[in-house]
Length: 503
Image (cartoon, rainbow, N blue to C red):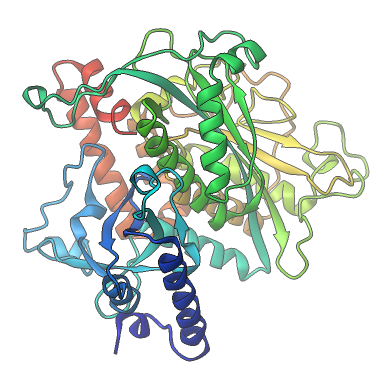
């Protein structure tokens, strides 16, 4: 029996998968591809995997579709410097890490529905030899799913939501930075772990939000991002010049949460690769360690839909009788108000999942339209939760402004589901909307990653949603990062090498 069969691809599901595989193999032959990457998103939202060589029979790819391809399990336990955060050869380790022993093998099983030809990785001089790409899912050798895979966490959260007949829809607004590389800093004599990032210069001077002149100044990068993003099949709506020097924003159309999370990983990893080939350094670090850099946010728009008909559950046809303008039920349905209340109740607990790096907490200082407290407002960009829409508006939604662009999208979106479901279960209602998002509030957001990790550990809903193994891995990895940063002789250099050069 193949790994695919042990994983449940039998009967009708197996026949459908077999047909999809044959379609992929035909496309590989027609495109004259020389190789296909099998990729999986790790704890930090970076693709890892292996590259399969395509011979005349595509035998390696056929084998991977049947039996997957092995990879070392410690990849799931790495911090942002690629140091393993657990003593995997300790005999006691398997008790805390089920199914993982002695850096054993796990298996990547590619999903044929995810197949792409990477637009920036064509053959040399237009000759035969481009690169295909497949997202892979993780399994144990017996076909069981790996529960500490971040994508599995989101799948479990969405399955819990589906039990209520509901689905989560998300739209992405992602801020990021791009610079021209002036020195790639990869000389062998200067090797370090992590490596030094490249030396860079600005593409636009910043401090002129949405300036057309600055957009024209950065036209080559905007063209590259647009062309490659659309070639990947991502629903890009707009590209904008943000406030900071060399800072940009990409806005995407809304789709179901799992697809949106997959798209975020594909965009983030794809743009780093495509722009690097063109001589640019793209970074999704919240605040780059460069003079006068402006922090980037990742604003997550969300709504619930009825799985049966796709109707927006948050839409209210008319304000609740007697509701004031600041009442959630003046604009949101009762279910939407419960969801909003859940997000507020777990704002501190979800912070580490939405903003998992040290630099992210510089945003929560009450400036540059970033939140500092667990508050909501109607179309208020200073509040953590910005409610958009009017009675009768089918696009009514909640925008969570807590996140940073380095967040793992699977965990970021899963946190929304954990919190929102709790609000629905308790039939919780939020306080009135704020008009003063930067005034002292009853619940302030964490001021540091350490404080956010404490809040996550104390949040029973987040802990239950993640599951004990995933919660332990996430906290252990992040605590190790904090300890290494605290021990660094030059903490600015640490941030530069740890995050800026790699993410």
